[in-house]
Length: 288
Ligand code: MN
Image (cartoon, rainbow, N blue to C red; front, side):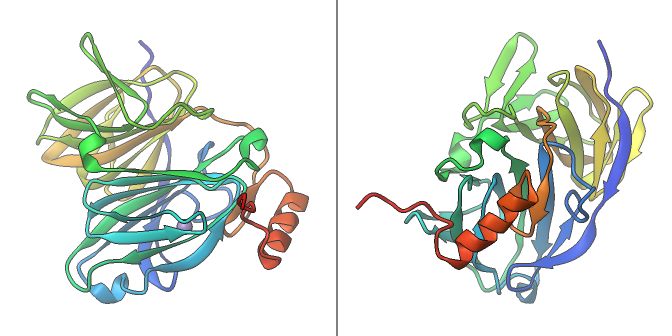
């Protein structure tokens, strides 16, 4: 068994996106702060409607996937492909922007708590210009494994092996083979989780604290802890328990050139994306 340990951290910092939604950005808050194939992780959480009411009016994406995971609140989305839906607590939207999509994400509440995450996951060069697809995954389709004396694991993507059993999340196969788990650990609980060797992986605690790896390094709240390679990670929750995301993916090892909501491999492809957007050609024409 080869244990993964925290090798570096990316602190989160306050940021504002869309029409002024307040959030905390860890991965992606600077161009070199990524963890291939993961480009960005935002956490939004507020009880104050002024922080989220403006929402994310229509905006484009090209070249990657956006994954929205709601913990509290409601967000309505609409896109240029004619898709629409309402994301509620525990729901996930997995959108493969690929060649291009224009969408909006607007809060469907005027008071109360809004909390969730948006993750950006890169696509390989060969898939960046394929047609956009998306999937709304209701909370009821996300398996929850109860581990006695440990807590619960929600499996959004990838597989989670426990004992002789293996539970697989609802997201289909992808080149990056993503693993996306939401772990809710009981106070002082300890657990060892298998992870695919060779995948890049990181942890993000959104409640409580957790110590990680053989050297039991403390991961504070709202900090992305990047892990060394290995096939297992051990976690120990603090005295108040811990809630954390575990993300892992097969690295693409391709050049990344980003300009706002466009993530391609070369500068020329970015210029093309901007031009396509300006000319109304970002989104593939639909057959009549
Ligand atoms: Mn978006």
